[in-house]
Length: 180
Figure 1: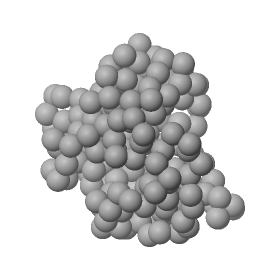
Figure 2: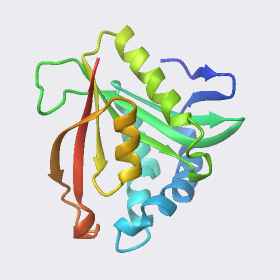
Figure 3: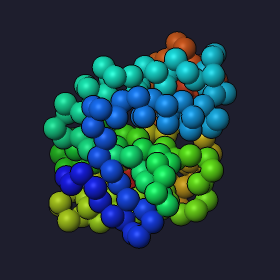
Figure 4: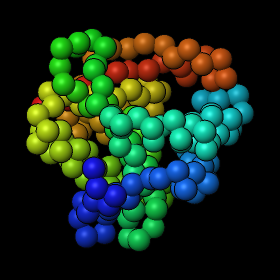
C-alpha cells in the first residue's frame, strides 16, 4: 500500500512508521480515553500503553498482511485506521479483511470521516476480490454499533472478552461483518 492515500481533498491516510511511535501513543492517550475510560478500572491508560507502545508498534508493523495509517483531516492527525487480511472465525473459507482499528478524535465525530473511511475500505476490498470485511466492537458502545450498522455491517456473533483489567460489565463484544 502507498505511504499516503487521498480519500478526498481534506481527508488522507498517512502510513504509520516505527519513528511515529511517540506520536501514535500521544494521539491514542488523547482520543481513546475520553470515549472508553468507563470500561477500565483505571482511565484506560494501561490499555492504551499496552496497545500503542514502541514494541507493540514494531510487532504490528512487522505483519505484512496489515496496513496501519494515521487519519489526517484538514491537515491534522485526528485518528488511526488499521486493517489486515484475516479469516473470519465463523466463515473459514472466505477471503476477508478485518478492520482492527478505527479510532477518531471525538472532536471530529459526526463529520462523516468514519463513513468515508469505510466506503474507501469497501471499494478497496472489492477491488482486491475480498468476500467480506469484519470487525469486533464493544457491545456497550451503542454509537459505534449504530454507525457500523448504518454503513452495512450486521452482527454475526456475540462473545465476552477475557480482560481482567476491564470492568466485567463491559466485556461484551460483537463480531460484525459486511458481505461484499
